[in-house]
Length: 162
Ligand code: HEC
Image (cartoon, rainbow, N blue to C red):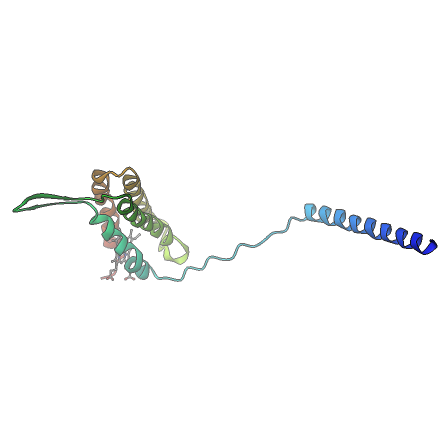
């Protein structure tokens, strides 16, 4: 009986000590919030690789999504038809938008002046194209092409070394 009583007291004491530790721990945690450092984002691809690997192919999809061809048989209108076809064009518009973000990252951004301006032009023009695919507007996709193309040309004129 005496032993049982002794063990009981010990276990209660251990239990209380445990709770004390938990409370102390919680207080310490409140005082010093644990800062988890976000893993550093390390740009790997060159601007040229992004252009050839992402921007060029994505722009081609958007540019060729909607067209009107006049042949001997008459006028042929080409535009995405199914939800999947619209989505595919939208995915490429999204790739253009994110490429604009990629070329603004780290030392890819050659300056914060015209480089940033032309990159943002590509982003904004890509957004117009993306919205048009979501609205399933062939006219909208066609119209977005001009602004997309202007962003490519303006930047290449100033920054692409020939
Ligand atoms: C903010 C600037 C900028 C914008 C916007 C931009 N580019 Fe570029 N692009 C460059 C630069 C700089 C190079 C040259 C990279 C090099 O050779 O190192 C390049 C090169 C390229 C190349 C590779 C050419 C080659 O064969 O060497 C392609 C393709 C290309 N761009 C497509 C596009 C298209 C399409 C768009 C528009 C949808 C676009 N770029 C928008 C800056 C830009």
